Length: 76
Image 1 (spheres, rainbow, N blue to C red):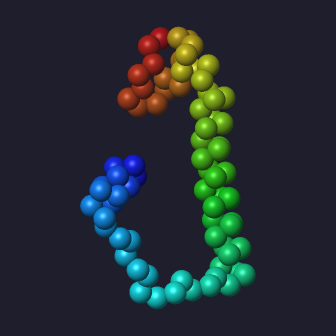
Image 2 (cartoon, rainbow, N blue to C red):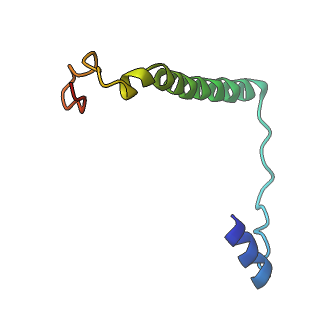
């Protein structure tokens, strides 16, 4: 973004004017967007928490619990 800002400043490029006014969202659409954003955030947090809780298997050399999967890189 910084490169684009500098380029715009040096070349004198003006922003593109909007062709139509943005549409206002209904209450149902706003609630749906909030629900979607919260669900995506919860999925990301769950993955992060799963990795932080499972880090002892990644660090620990005794990871025979995880070595049953195909293509496992665990060294027993």
